[in-house]
Image (tube, rainbow over all chains, first blue to last red; front, side):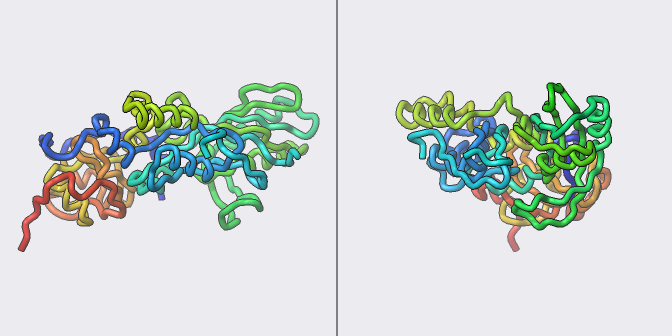
Amino acid sequence: MRTLVDFVRFRTLVKEECETDEKYGEHPDKRSISRLLQLGVVNLDKPPGPSSHDVSSTVKRILNAEKAGHAGTLEAMGRSRRIRCPAGLS
Amino acid sequence: MKQWGDPGVSGVLPVCLNDATKTIEYLHMMSKEYVGVCEIHGEFEEKALRKWVEKMTGPIYQRPPVKSSVKRSLRRRIIVRFTVEDVSDRRFVFRVVTEPGTYIRKLLHDLGLLLGTGAHMVELRRVRDGFLDEDSSATLLELYAGWQLYSKKGDETLLRRLVKPVEDAFKGFPSVYIKDSAVAAVAHGAPLASKGVSKIDHPLSKGDVVCIKTLKGECVGFGTLMMSSDEVLQAKSGIVVSVERVVISRDLYPKMWKSH
């Protein structure tokens, strides 16, 4: 699979100019807060200590989400200690 | 007890919510940027350090560390940029841009072997993951405050700043923009036909992974391009994208295909 796609600069070319009907769908920036929580991403500043997995499950609990998953594990390796997230949040 | 090899690792970690979790495997395709501190176990010359760091830029071979969650087979990874930012005593600050799946701790361990003294990573911070960087990142505490303001006071201003549309993470990702009339078909699992395409990023080749977007910029799904972007622009018929992942809800756009 091709990686580093974010390093390529693309030009968007038009095949067929089309209008989009405002009756359907939603502009991502204008998404309602409830839809945002359904289809959103948190750019989290992970604190040192807890594992990426711990942190994403804390996010899940804070936001009352059904599912939450993180991309690109950010991990200290070979840890055995488990540190809990900010007091009162867990 | 302070364990050896227990560095503070912090920084950008994209966390996808609910339906957005379907995009995670595609977030993995983008580069990561780190800043960290490394300690060298012995005397060294700054000139030699800079030389080896420069030599480790480009494609490298790496075997995942013993304590890792993946198969320990040799992997090839591209180090896009690797620089020494500051040297003080036996420690130095580095900045590195890598392909996903690179073990930074291992990279610095290997640098230590090349220097002949050994070295280990003391601290690491990810400052960018794909299109998300630390300037726009949120702490757990901010998120907690945002949620409390929203759920207790009905004020969504802070929460809106912290929870972003999943499309923000795919801003510059290679994309195909499709007509309103094609959205429901793709959302129901049909491949994308050339008649449904309005715009396409260029240059792209056959086999590239693309994000399918609506003309409003919503992420419909992901798939593999079946022809080059040049061919897509010319094509009168045929399948353009084989869809592997649908993200959008099925009911946002009307069904417009003919039933027989």
